[in-house]
Amino acid sequence: MKAFQDYYPEHLSHCYGCGRLNEHGYRIKTFWEGDESVTRFSPKSFHTAVPGFVYGGLLASLIDCHSTGTAAAAMYRAEGREMDSPPPFRFVTGSLQVSYLKPTPLGPELVIRGRVQEIKGRKVIIESTVLVEGVATVRGEVVAIAMPDNFGS
Image 1 (cartoon, rainbow, N blue to C red):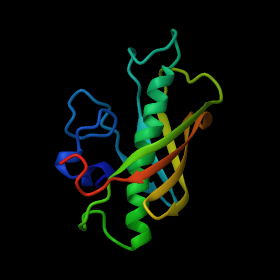
Image 2 (image 1 turned 135 degrees about the vertical axis):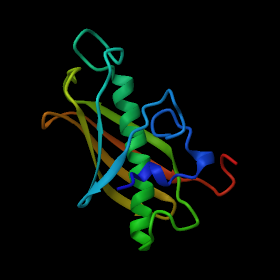
Image 3 (image 1 turned 60 degrees about the vertical axis):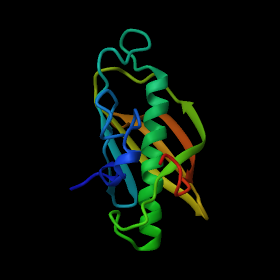
């Protein structure tokens, strides 16, 4: 099964968080599980804040890229279109709000789950939560804005 990010056009696939063409990036992969979007990510030892815990900036960027990918997939769903149908949807972050609920341990796999809160015109609001072994450690809200056709070309 292809991830949301696998459908991004090549010229828009270089993002550090979600770009499949960025050899140094996270290259996250996001999929639908019912009405939720899910990304799984295993931080490396260098993604540390203090020994034993994940760096908060990494967590924010995972929420950011997970949510913009979810926004694109949600817009395709809302229009009843397949993700490989033109024109392609690609979103950028209009705002990102992150709440750190508790320290995120370094070691276990992170699961990021997203839910669409609203779709209105070119704007999609996504709430995403980072979970470690079923425990929520970070919650974020992203207001994602559809890119204009000429953006990034």
